[in-house]
Length: 327
Image (cartoon, rainbow, N blue to C red; front, side):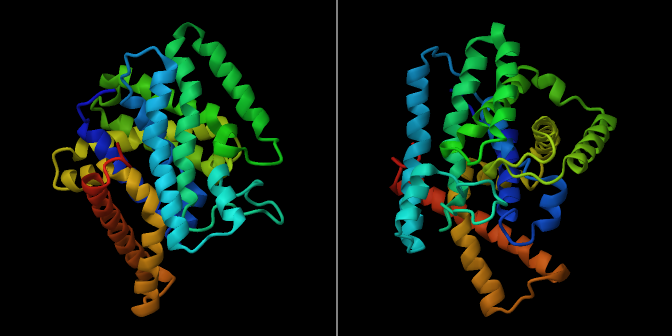
């Protein structure tokens, strides 16, 4: 893997993790209904962008990724079950299954599997299963179009499944293709950061247009809006826009803060719900801030920043005292 960090990719992930926290803040309804969750696929694309493996052995690379993703998954799963006092059999099965619910999200009498502060952990197992279709695209570029065709058919067919598959297997071909999109973008890096501001405006217009045409989406529960192909385009455009913004922010006062958040985004991703719960109790329970209106959105912005900083400090402490979890 590439060892030298790319500052603007860390900034990109820092911006992305702020969006992720906001999407769980209780103030996200309007934003999510218009722009969806393109900021979660951003992390899949960033993973492909920084992929630089020279080892053609699938099993050795997959084993390394498994350790890097599953050790923190197990650690935070156990920690959150303890913090939330969730010890029922269904909670344990939810950790094994690694999906928020068993049936599509709006199903009647749905079965919630991850309800104790651990829903975001689906991302770690999804990142692992996504690596398999990505690796095939990376390893066999001559068959790239054929593989993408198979992935499209697979993703389309999985939409008709009555349940959500464990470890996001039903979305793996889509997320694997997003990782490959990031890898492809890295190969054409100079084109990504050309200077025409008219191009930025057009990117933003197309992004907003596609978002509104496609409707609400949520990758974690296999909701793509009206079309998973539109959803894929939205993820690419949204990430591209934020990547260009991140490049611009490299030499600004925000650079250091966002960069740090990006470097610690994995732990923040995992622990965010717990800190959001505490912040909600403090801001609205003890301090009696309103839960609607403009003041509520201002308080939500404060909560997002506080949660991000707390998660960052937890990550720093873990890297110092529990390095085996994040190795």
